Length: 555
Image (tube, rainbow, N blue to C red; front, side, top):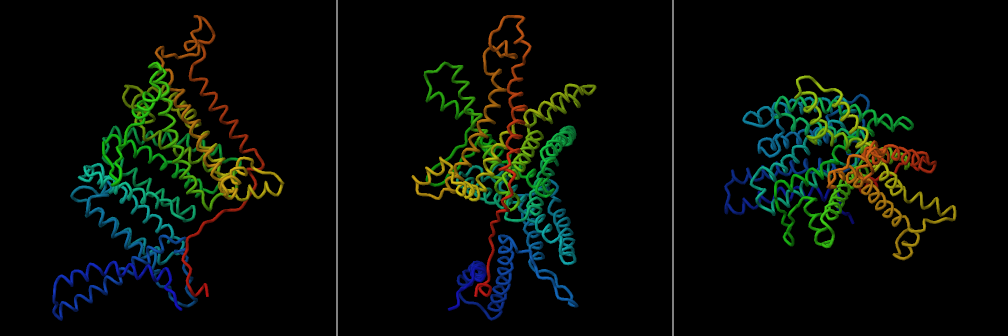
């Protein structure tokens, strides 16, 4: 008995979905004339073709090997590839439609002439891309990546504008639905493609978002941002070279993880936007009102530890706040690392290195997005004074480039080590069993819970990495803020301990202790982990595929 394949079923579902509105309209009309009947069947045929086209492209998008086309035979004139050309045309039409609706217009295409400029720009781009796809096989995947990255950028900006700048923001049900769609769209940025394709998708998204954010800025602010980006790129490149000099990664993998690190700042920034806008989310059964971390931490500590003095309550609530922020940031970096590392890493050492690149990308984005960091340094010491104050500027830039970047590198590098153990849980457990040894905790829990040992070990390593990274990250933020929280505002160790005047403790800056711990200690920890021979062992590349297999191939 012939069974309908997944591809045929999907195509039939797409056709039926597109035919339903037409059939409903014909039914409402009662009777139809011969001419009307002809138009009806013509519309059905057109919608059928359009449905097949959409379904074909959609199956291509979710399949890893959709761009693998058979080479034309010798002596035959190659025909234009249907899949890539169809995707180019449909994505161009979708982008122009988003511009027309005004929901996702990037700054150059906003305003009264925005639609005209968008049609001209993307029309010419689609024509050039189509010719390139036809003539040059090697560029088809990159055209797909640029088109998908552009389309997802417009879609995310459209959802963001609808929630925070439109009437949707007053409807908690619509806000909740919009955030769900944003999460789905965000997930599509990290598709199951090769490292070079994923890097192109993320790079396109980063570029278009940068253009959107910088387009309408005043001249002085724009100048400060551009200088800050150029300055922040220097330590980022130095850090990347420093950690890749022993075991170089492919350029595509490095760029992929750097862009992924930049995008890992999005969850914390988006939540902050939700808090500042005061929107509410209604999921039918429950309502969510985003609240600032400091306020919720203060309420939690005050309610749980009411007998504590005010200063201790302040310290504990601040520590809880920094731990929550650290948890969100490290969990975000762990997610983008695990999503981007699939099919790229072959050892625990690889995962650690790429996790460090993610941390460097995160620090780079944080330095240029936060107005009090590099942008503030440029304005305060270079643009506002009558003459540039290079000493103060370089001091602040070097301090932040070394210290705060090392905090991200240390915490995320440790997380990357345990993430690597989790990724290669199966081979590691097998190696230990061959040596007649066991991972005690994982082995005990697997027997108690009656679960596979490698699954328990994988979960254990993931949780351990997230917890350690959160503690390292949160504790540093708390330590550098501690002088401002204490009544005496100590600047030195002597001030903190109440040492007598003239004591050498007054010559030791308070921030020197966490600085030495994270810079010197961090280098020692990461160097020790990189030096372990077990981490350098090549275990092969774990590949997960999502492909559709024809019935003929299975017969």
